Picture 1 (spheres, rainbow, N blue to C red):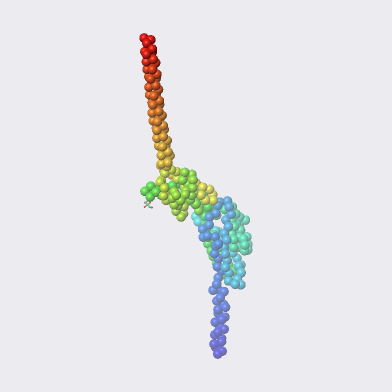
Picture 2: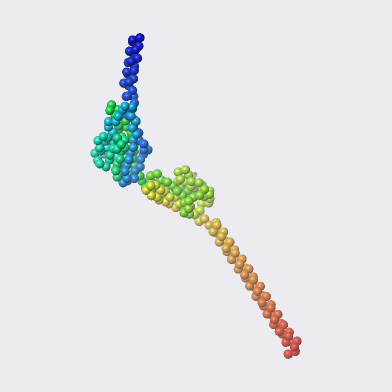
Length: 267
Ligand SMILES: *[C@@H]1O[C@H](CO)[C@@H](O)[C@H](O)[C@H]1NC(C)=O
């Protein structure tokens, strides 16, 4: 009985010892794994710290590693001590890193290392890239399948919009793909198709010019010409009839005149 009790307390004691080491500091980024930053704006990275109960953070270290170049990893900010440079700073108990006036050389991989009072550590990484403007928009056409495809070179988060003759594409004209980059036509491939690609830095576009949409205007022109021809024919006939009628009347008058003279025996 006494042996069993001792064994029981030993197990409990070992569990108590093991419990804190079983759970360590967990760190993850609230941002997406890939963050794009506009040059000149502030880069803000926010990490979420998950600590075991009773644990407290004693140190947070933010490091930066440029993707290209052999500069290696440098510490950019620390908590509780401030960063080596006033431009980068750890805020909110070290969970947030702020880099003022982001520049191209600030891109790369950022890591946060969180240490608790027992020396347990948690690490998370996040990649940061420049937010790029939209470049080189081009529209390609697939004539056999009545579809248009828009491409863009390297802009960040491009949003595609289609215009036909400078107006928004309607359902009657065709269907746009889920990402917006393709337009599948239900209507004939004619007129001007413009693909506008935009993101927060601006927009760029390209226009594909197909054969003019002239069915309606063409038929209208044909109708006008037919009408004019008809008017000409009717007018001409009316004129001829009028002239013929007039000559006949004249002749009749002259005949009457002569017959009057003859009957009166003037000659
Ligand atoms: C046109 O689209 C069809 C279907 O997507 C594809 O099989 C074909 O290769 C395309 N043609 C050209 C010239 O791109």
